[in-house]
Image (cartoon, rainbow, N blue to C red; front, top):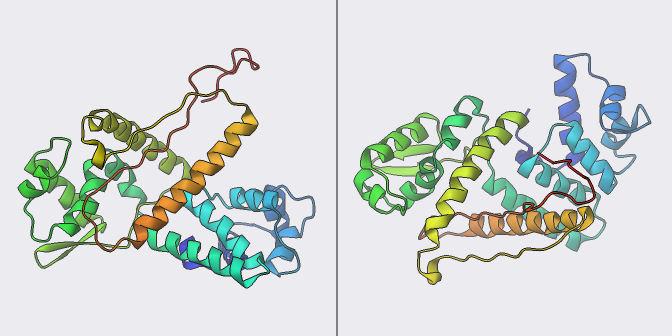
Length: 277
């Protein structure tokens, strides 16, 4: 099945998902509808046939039933809005977001390399840095990194990136391919958790950099589950907008990292000793 960013029709994506599952197992429209939480055994088929739309809750249920998460879920949401929008302005606005996401997340499945890629900050940084320094040696690339790194470590990362297809060697220059890493939901979540830990640690020494090249801010606040959800949505929208801006950049000068973090500093006073992990 093609990556989701190669689709613009959410009904076609759902149908292809269904056909793919059906080829591999005794999957049915009844089971698809049941997994998505719909009481009607034919609801998914009705939607795919264009005879019914997905509500906001229906979008979330359907995406979860297809195992979507992260940017794939974001893209699916936009694709449904695009497919169900009645005004041309709304369609155009949504389609532009879809294009930006597709450009930023051209995907090939490389599950075997997933953990190796995310086990060090060097891999994602050098994937961005090497293409904007044509002809640079590993030593020259190493000198451009704020966290101290050796030329040998740079060489090791470049070898991995080219071997896995994340970078391509064009003569003496590196070119970023349209490939990115994706694995199963559980594998991706586990790998990304490790990368979040690494990138969070890198943020502390970055406080010593000049204010002109970094931005730090924060707020401590009391929240309910409802307000947490609203803020989470705002952060998701902010992240997507940042991705769109970066995808449109044609004159890259530096490699940056944005950490969007929202986490509890206390237990829930209304839930006793229960903790969320």
